[in-house]
Length: 333
Image (tube, rainbow, N blue to C red):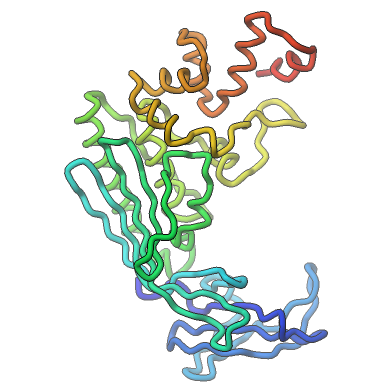
């Protein structure tokens, strides 16, 4: 993809004076960066630069407010957006690797050059033998980020990856068919390798990416999750929205939620215990120190992210009741 946005914008707080706003822009048509001084205009949210129409002083490209809303990237100081992107899927004996690479632009409010460019590369290695999905990010060939995507409670991926910019916009929607094709290949080849290793049929890893978000982030997170939790269901809309988008979904309670596991719970050590167990549920019960009984297995299979709540309920069931509130908190569940 040779172009990800038509226009890039960054604010210059130090040059704002009263009702005047100085913004900096980068035109992707010709690669020119420039500054403009605008009068302020009021709206519901306060005062903003009156920049509904912008012309690039070098090539004359015209950017309207509609263009900016659809294919325009606003960056705060230090944030980055991709200028270009190449996506590649490679297959190996026991793994698949998804790679994206290209050039990205970084906003720098204090620099006289306004923006600077750098090379980036991101890889996600789906290793069937180790049941891991390792995400790495490189800047100018230097590794700066490295973690396991199988820990579904770690929400860093949505902030770190340039895949977040591949959402429903005019420029990216042109490639929607290619995105679906590469994700389908990834699911099918990974499922085949998993079935060969584990000797049982893997249920479909497909989940819809949603209408507004990235074409890639939710499907990739689900694939990584299922790589570790092979015999559980895909991420539900409710679970994904709460865990990843932090939407306030509740289970029958108006004032408290039951998702109480943080990103440190599914540590690499605990993920290894789960992958080495006879099955996923047995592994979850082992790390939660719960008995491997049919009733509890059914609970965990239905709601795998509520291990601490299961533990509370089990404690109550054993007669270890501390307070009335402890019972009341678990009644509807």
